[in-house]
Length: 605
Image (cartoon, rainbow, N blue to C red; front, side, top):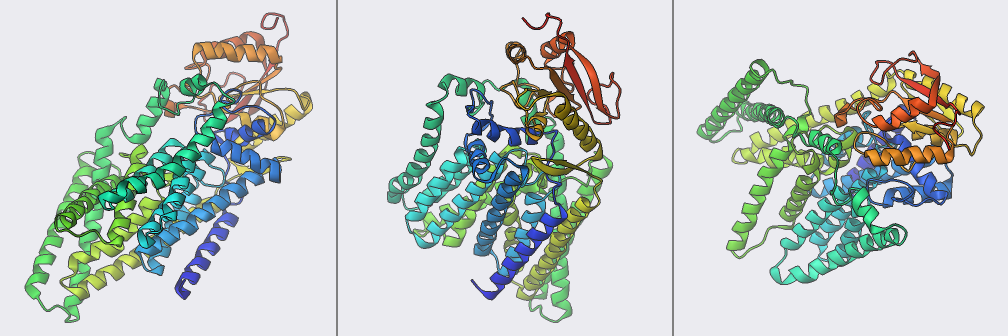
């Protein structure tokens, strides 16, 4: 490593620690997803079985690994925070290394800083307490796989293919989309080799991947009937309920595809406009300093840049005025378009080199692998790529690096015939990227510092949450401590197993999350039978609107049978939060309703 690399590493560590301090304990959302991530590993640690006793959507790695962390370091939120934080730090280190294969140290630093702010620490979704640790670990193993593939391309040492295969296998048992993207990158590397090397290369990649994934699922299937995994977990994308299809279509951008394409077009026009301005600036600077030898060529470039800027501005104005499209959407909306164009370009470069009896350079192969990976990993959000957050933060690290590389390295080459203009354009782009990186990091930190919060302190760990949520949880936890015994089960819905974890009370249910689509009517009756068998005295209903799945309110729009049975056999005894007993899910203020069993012999044998 050069001295500049050590300096960049020091900056990244400093920013990581500073963001950790600024965001301290603001990472967790006890109402959405986090309860599952807290409680699942604990249930496994206590002897329950994943998929059969404990419902799980994804591969088995994350809950079992977090259960292992609980065993080693204690059942505490800090264990999860540190696990997610270290995974994020390792990912940042590897992202910087990947960036350095494409860019000089300072520019690689800028690319990685964006990953720190928009992926690892973004307020709407972070790595320390994510919506799913499967996504954190999947992203980490993907980046490890890419780093191994790149080292193979650089050194031709086959051991790196074995490491890449192992990383892809681990990604598969985290979350399917990460495994698919890692495999796509690996197959691209094999495809770019000479044909006689395809079979041995594929074997070296596939064998460790298959062994890793097969071992994990063999262990799981030794304890769980295969029919249950195939029917219930959606690991193989079969029997997916309409509500989850609705949710994933929204993430993909297929709910309003025309609108999504229009937003992508707006982002592309903004990008073209910025590129045109930078081009004009570089040319004007070169002319002003007498560094333009071919004035006719410079004039042609300027005219094209002026025309591009005019047309882009016209398109943006039309979108804003005629279609009333917003300008504040994610600039990463344009990512799929850029990736598709890059794929076409590098594929044509490969065909051209092959027809001439040559091969792509190592650098071009690396870029092509990153392009294919980025295209595969963003397919889940293809028409609506967000700027980090709950979902995008795990898909975007490598696409972000690639976009910075294209902006700072490839774009200025448009002006290569006027070297001084190309150099000036590159410097301006670096300055712009520096401003963007600093601004994004500062805004993220500012939002954390200025967020009103309630510090929820429990023996299982602390979190800083919205005041309404914090106060309601505090009262609910106090109620549970006062009115229940340590081994007594409680049930919280639609997403409330954070109460089980923080209060150290078991749940009688197989499901940690009861958002739309998870329970059929038959499964609702099974949930009722579990409540009966465990004689659960207290049920907690949280004000968690689920409009992202379509149906909004638990008990009214979905799980109607279960909620009807609860209302027949339980009575409301408390409402924690600023709401009345008649408050409905979706109300502006957060609340938790407490239902107590009416032991009248009707609901229980």
